[in-house]
Image (cartoon, rainbow, N blue to C red; front, side, top):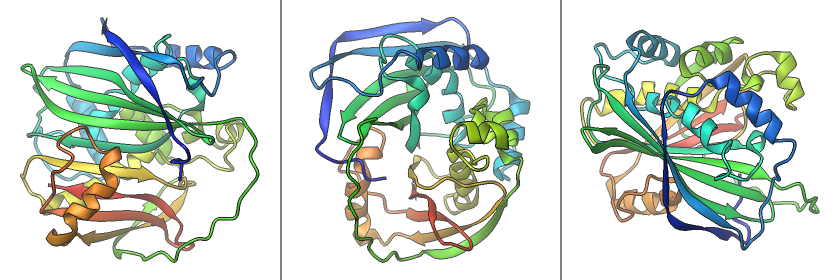
Length: 329
């Protein structure tokens, strides 16, 4: 999705406001509140609006070992033991993100958010017996004629140290009608196919059960049609987790490791998709990193990765892209 059209970066102002969450938010209550707020909140903002620097914090989080094991099975992870997959931590923030977008600190329609990108980096292995602190803050808001991109900084903290950091990027479409321009498409180069993956009809419900992401368009054909989809679509984070499960064997126990990903066209279930991959050559890693640094966690932007794998998920028959990104370690 090309959204870098005459961008206006909306300013985050004032001292940081920290809000402590006493318990994990109820997902059902959040969905109801989001639906009500969608009736009165806009899908755009004034160019000169000042947004507060706000952060939501959940302390003393203990993890559900059984749920993590189910998550591994649903997403295809085969690593034994109590080490947690890197992609699992994004699911822990679904409640905090939902809580954040229903506060006055985020004055945009919460029901119009489209998950367009996800990146994260993990410093060391994290196990199920650790007690964690979660922090979610608004990282940046950019406005174009097409809509608004909102980025949230997600942090997992243990013993006062950030051990996992990510950026979730969401897009809100503008309701302003624009003339359609024909865009010339460049010929795509497909990556070598590593694996063919079947996505069953109920994968949305399976993933919702282990991630708490119960967005209706993933669950049933009827609720999918209410949201404008002909069939239920797979979670973007399931597809990313499934890719990582196939690629992480190359990095064994090496840390830090990370992922940058852009979500493209939806996967209508059931589906058969292909995972393509390409090991990045060391001499071009710096160029590749610079192209994607805007969606990366806010670490050293000049950092290069000696071990990097470019990946893509495509529809097996049509070849259209569902997911593209890089896995590095």
